[in-house]
Length: 551
Image 1 (tube, rainbow, N blue to C red):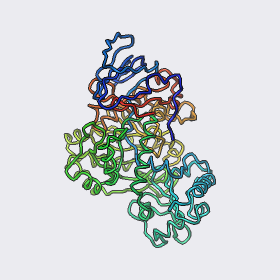
Image 2 (image 1 turned 180 degrees about the vertical axis):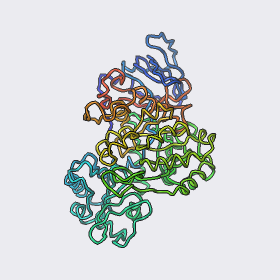
Image 3 (image 1 turned 90 degrees about the vertical axis):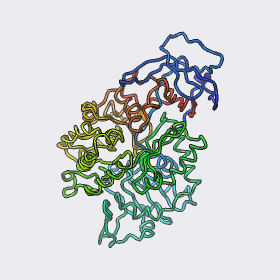
Image 4 (image 1 turned 60 degrees about the horizontal axis):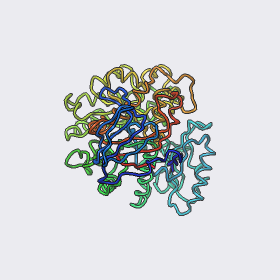
């Protein structure tokens, strides 16, 4: 559990949370910061929230305020108050499920990963399968994919399946492979790859579409398991200051769960959901986009599509061979015609489209497909490319000229930096993780984390965006630091930029009159500390719609 205890000395009157129908709330003694319509920083000392949960106004520091008897006063204790942060690209249910399963993130060797799996299996004898995520062979001295035989040593008695940190590869033991009936003669599916051993036998790792061979036999979570995972995810998001998230690629069962929570006033974060593929879209929203609900906690405006895999598993689709794997250009998930057909169909039905594209070939292919959509439709729907990690320098200006939102995750750059250099070589890094270039060109930019691939803490993203360093301060001076953002740009990416990408800029993203009072209270002012310390900021309070949801 990521929830943190507040120091006793700042308990103040913050312990009370206004109930539904409560009078207006006046937050005083605040070191307040927000953005204006031009994404410039505005400071305030007090915030008035109406009984509808929306901002009435802010007051400058030192202003004399006429307090009325119906106002509930809350003393911020001089601490920093800022807009709730928005993650433009996360995976809510996966965050919850992963928090309740084997966590292999941070493991520094295959042996350490296997030890965690062994311990979890022993502690959970009732589990039908042992599942988890977070492994990354690039952080192990072996620097190779693990095998089914190695996982058998940790889990010999049950099927086991563990997804890679980026979600684009899965590691199965032999019991899981046998249940899936994958053998040497099983062909690689389109858009996927089975890693193979002697004689073509499955070695244990399944890349991109090949994951579906194993996942098809995974037991479906029960309703109780799904609710437990969702509750955990809501708790985690509130604890790190997220008040809104773009949930990428949900299925119909997840949408029904969200609707039930929304109807019961149990959503403690705003969710801008996108359906996971055209089939899910047709089931969830057969009549067209579903706008924000009455209190604007839930929407489904679009669809998430995939055009390639990930860089770490060499599934990202490149224009030229991988530098460290001659003859391999990654995985193309779509023909040009198939992608354009999907884009045209979704756009024709009025849906926003967000396409996962990591490699330079994939990004070019998606830009080409988007270019066929009429300009007015592109502007209205707000078409997006998710990740846009490796883009041909010649294609970077097309984001702005076509009006495409670059939805990017700063911590990907600081996690991937060494691996990206090995995969691409120096010559192709000019368009890699090119945040500042995209913003300078006039492109819309939305910040996120891709959690649980990366931690959900948005202050990690602000830190990575500004420093181009990991949280251990490496590399000194930052990696390709010319693409770093200013702190104001980074804050805009995680507030106004992400709100625009979710069709919510009229009601979230800033603490300005008429918008929802989604705000956080943190232990230090990000503009008054060293950039290298941004990731250390702790969230002490999270409020959504004028009501406290954490702690």
